[in-house]
Amino acid sequence: MSETTSMDEALRDLQLKQSELSKTFKSLKRLGLEGDCEMPQLVIVGMQSSGKSSVLERISRVRLPTDSTRFVK
Image (cartoon, rainbow, N blue to C red):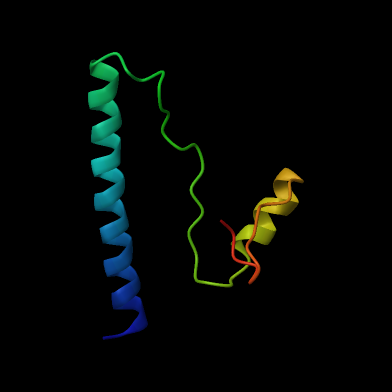
């Protein structure tokens, strides 16, 4: 399987999961519970060790918590 094909499949899977999450939040809103939890406003996706956390730290000027191996918690 090519890298493009597996990336396309991963993006389709991500879209499905996002759609399910969106439906769940809409259901919570209908029940009047939207104030208890909010849909994420920003989602960062990328390969492991591709610099996602570093970009977020630079943009936000906030140090993100990491464990002893430098993985973001």
